Length: 285
View 1 (cartoon, rainbow, N blue to C red):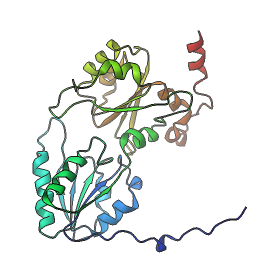
View 2 (cartoon, rainbow, N blue to C red):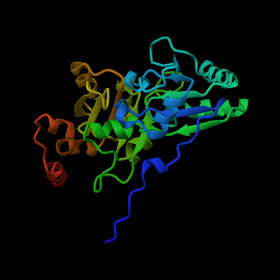
View 3 (spheres, rainbow, N blue to C red):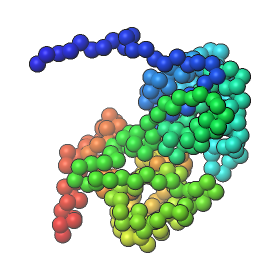
View 4 (tube, rainbow, N blue to C red):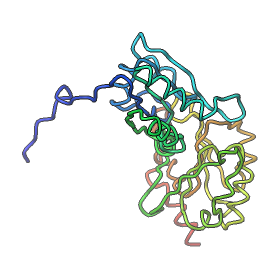
């Protein structure tokens, strides 16, 4: 087999961060090592960084020394800047000729309001670049040893948010269709209305005994994972002290954590080579 010489990174030209541009970048679920090269390039050349609440402060340490850091985090139940105000601020800074990095946790286009901010820039005539990030619904679960898809378990996965723009459980969602149509549900911002979500899914046909997992502070040193069931999730999260930020997953992929918890294995946990064997036996009975 002929081996091709690897292309040196030095031969790859990173995009130039022009004055008056806004880069909308995803910082990933938390671990600074999950940041993309493009996002790191933006950090090192931005004049001002407008960052969200879930951006790890160690990531901000990679900004150039002269960069201005401006907090624009939105957290449920806490005083937060209005989305319109954030968008107007990005426009204002870009019009001043600044290189503006809008740094968001996860991915800007996955429940991150990146589309809203980008459309505001379009309306104002501001040039922009989108830098995708690793969303918590994939990267966060990966750090918990739970894949979002697995052959033999699911050929579909659904991402949903636990509250709408008014802060309540989204009534626009067809909860019965979600319950019956998607073998794996991955939920963002679901903690506040967890009881309501549980009740809607059970009413829609999901089993109370179905596996469910909560991953708090995903990919960070203080990550915490709770495995439970749909029926017991409210009581178990209260007992375990599970609190936002958390990513929630419902479905049989949760059982794979017994075999794929690589972080646990680093601390002595014994993994199971066939974590689904018991599940298959139970389904056959």
